[in-house]
Length: 116
Image 1 (cartoon, rainbow, N blue to C red):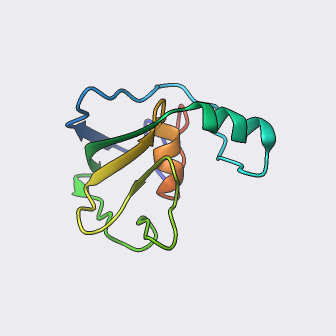
Image 2 (image 1 turned 60 degrees about the vertical axis):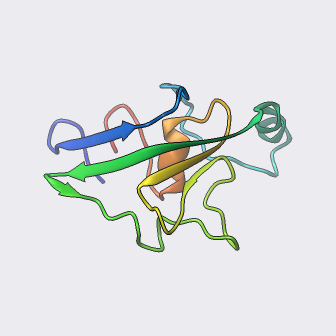
C-alpha cells in the first residue's frame, strides 16, 4: 500500500468517453445483503463504458494481469466496475456514478485521502 507524501504514484486514466467518476465516496465496500445499500445500487442505472487504466508505482507499471486483480465469468470482483482479461489495462464500468473507490476495492485495494 502506498502512503501519500512518502511514495510516488501516478494514476493515468484516459479514454473515459464522456464518463466521469465521482471524486468523493464513503469508501465503504458494497454490501448486497444490506437493504439500504442494495436499494442505492439499484437506483444507479446500467451503463457500459470503458476507460484505459495505468497505475505507475515508483516508475514501474503495475501489472494488472494477475488473478488477484481480474474478474472472470465465474467471479466478478465488482458488478459495477472491474478489469478482466485479455485487455487488463481497460476498466469496465457497468453502473452510472461509479467511483474511484469502487474501482480500487475491485482491485483489492482502497482509496483514501492519504493512501492508495
